[in-house]
Image 1 (cartoon, rainbow, N blue to C red):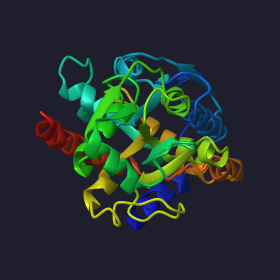
Image 2: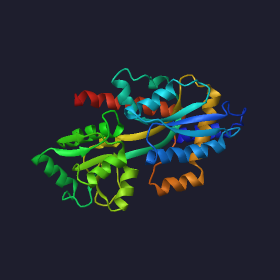
Image 3: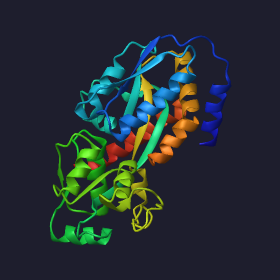
Image 4: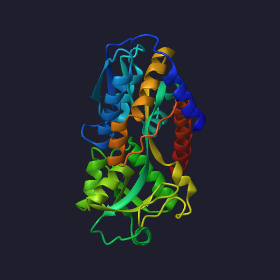
Length: 311
């Protein structure tokens, strides 16, 4: 990422060519209000606004539905004038595209950068008799383990299918929950045995004494008592992550992309944003537009491989 950081610094060092072309910008969030994803996007977009030439208004707009598909379609078909950008939750949108008739082509999007990157964690309720990952595997040998999740188009659902397949867990996925907070709370109240979703949410719930983290998809974890991709002997698990990429419709002018990318880089370095990320246990790591495009391609290939394996 050294070269990427240098490239982003170069973008920031360039003098502003002109004011941003759009006075108001719709910043699409393909998730419901109030969750970690929504709060993260609002925090970063608010900081970005201060670093754009002319300081246009960046208005967060929640567009839910179809596992992020409705919001992605809205971004993709917007006018390429900088008036609409948004967050793409990868690999969820890769899954939607591979299923066909998604209404967008990720390869044609104008990538601005990355807002954040989350690994996943596997949790049970804090009072569950399942105390360790070995206990979970023992349960799997006795019966199917019930995992709660959101709909089949979501990143969380597909991550659950892939992780349980990699780890050899016999799983039944119970869907219908609106988002990560809801389906993890469902495990706490006993709707299912376990759940798998982004770590920032799980760390917060673990601190509150609601859940116990048994394993993560990190290469190495610092969570006491939790196993990781290395200790599980499954290094490929580390590829399983959720990428929060910022992009716009196809053919967004280069100077607009550069303004947005520069503002994003500066926003992620803003002390208030850094403090928010620390408090929320969120990995707010950036990427250049080129690196963002590469992340999409890599995640799409990973999902395609596992879609074939899962049948």
